[in-house]
Amino acid sequence: MSSTNERAAVILAAGMGTRMKSALPKVLHRIAGKPILGHVMDAVAAAGVERIIVVTAPAGQSVRDYAAARGAHCVIQHSQLGTGHAAAAARPALADFAGRLVVAYGDMPLVASDTFAASFAAQAQTGMAIVAFNSTNPSYGRVIAEKDGRLARIVEYRDASADERRVTICNAGIMAAPAPQFFDWCSRLSNDNSQGEYYLTDVPLLARQDRVACAIVMAEETEMMGVNSRGELAAAEAEMQRRLRSAALANAVGLQAPDTVFLSHDTVLESDCTIGPYVVFGPGVTVKSGAEIKAFSHLEDCVVHEGAIIGPYARLRPGADIGRGAHIGNFVEVKATKVGDGAKANHLTYLGDASVGAGANIGAGTITCNYDGFFKYRTEIGAGAFIGSNSALVAPVTIADGAYIGAGSTISGSAVAKDALCFTRAPRKEIQGWAHDFRERKAKEKSLSKKEK
View 1 (cartoon, rainbow, N blue to C red):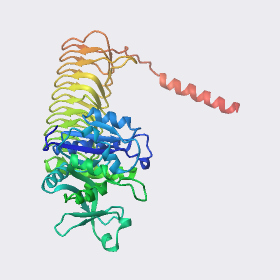
View 2 (cartoon, one colour):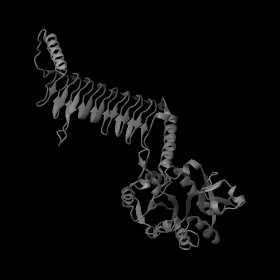
View 3 (cartoon, helix red, strand yellow):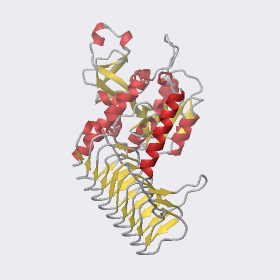
View 4 (cartoon, one colour):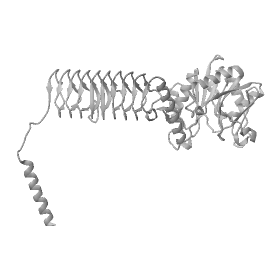
């Protein structure tokens, strides 16, 4: 049997999400690059939860796969009989659990870990706690409080009296309670209502009958945003981006046009880096102090080291590692490539499955030809090497330190030696007067063609 001080979370993710009109379960749609369910799981974990139970629908195998891969235990709500019934489905998974639990919804990606922590703290004082927020929206149930501030009851807006409808404290659906008592209350729920369902909102009434008081924890309305449609998904994304940008600015990141920059949940921007307008960060990006990302660049799963300059219009794909003071310029794409300190690729270049030594210069139009239709191969470019414009480096190939590749060359086969010059060009040929004769001949042909018509 577990300790009464341990914490668990029951996350309800069995909703069908039909308003999303998507084959992807709604809790797996992404906010700032992370599935909605992942945000909820991370928030409860940060509040000290050791065990997470995710309640899914029978058809929710992809939800179960995702949650299980992140360490959660998954259970199935076999019939859609209401939120209380869904929460009760977690009982077998917590049969040996004597601690406290919080019930959360898997479609609420904006709830802060501090709110879950406050729920546990309030529950420890009274026996039970719910989360509420201020709103005038008629779609939310109203929280009716006693004079001492504790919960009296929750009433749905459609069932509320005129006085109750004027109450602006609304139910968020999140509650904390001792696990054994919570499941006992769930077992006593009635479905004697117009929907024939077992409501989670009736649990505090049963607790009150057992003389267990319920505290009310207040949170911001934006935290309680549920995602049930594409419009709500976009609204949640906007709020998450606002939070991430605010955190970056507070950390002394230079966002030149904050509202145009899109961040991922795990973007690491060190202080004193500079981010230009319309930059997009996919997951897994770290930008070190002093680096600059210029406008309209796209980065994912990469590292940009101190003093490097990226863009404008650059693309860093997974595995790009850009060294100190290196330059990756306009319309340059880098994938699975380490670019050494001070190296430059300033124009119209593709570097894939390669390494570029410190101080090397990659001319405009250079391509590492890394794929033969079946396998990928590496290109090694040494320190201080100079790759002339419009060169094609056919991997696997090595350009040693200090070597020069003449513009317009296609290099394959054996390695180019250190400090050598290597180029592949046809000899120059010039035919005097050819262009004049060509124009005259074609003009005559065109004239004859018109006469024939």
